[in-house]
Image (cartoon, rainbow, N blue to C red):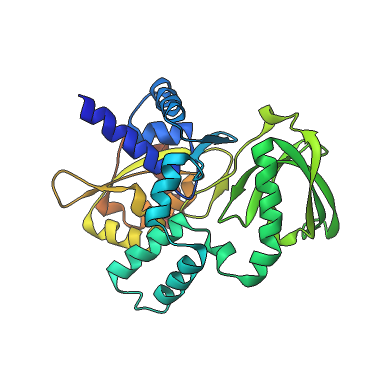
Length: 303
């Protein structure tokens, strides 16, 4: 039916407009559609005047899109208003669920790590602006005087930046000299210079994901769980970012958790800690991982 299609279009539009980027597999999984249908929707958005951007393997909608910007102007706060509101909320009672919901919504839409810090606004914002321009134009940059704690060095790095990450505090780049994808911290750059050189290694760009358990990798693994009330409450208390991946089950006493993870270690620790209140759904690799962990614990306990 047409209203079902419209619902998927609106949900996709909402996902693409969030303050993050989703990969093609993530979008298909969240919407329950094929890649072909996803690309059809993206092309439909472009035809309607939305600016659909691709960052590495991920898609988002530029807030300068005509329709989106008109809506944004009516309902959004200025950066100054957003920072002031977020500061007031941070001083309020953290146990108030209504205020916590407002905080989460603001955090999803605004880059507070950049906005709320005056020093970052003056120094890092210039770097972010240059990097953002380079990504838009698909051009290379020089990260001047980049300080690396691993090599105990400070030197210039010529890179192809293709994705801003973690509230614009980091940028994912491909470095031709090392032939590797690396994540660089904005705070460790003394300056950023745009080069008149186009990307030449786009096929080598690999996004780095970080899951809600703070494990990172260039790949993501789908996990689907059925949670009881205890598991549901503990999950949201310890990992508030999991909220977007949780939906009520039909019986009203359970919840379905579907999320991508970068490693089974984080989600595995959670499942093993509340094993009697969790069912593993349709993820055979993860089920096998849990079995191996249980077997290992049994062997250790019998020694």
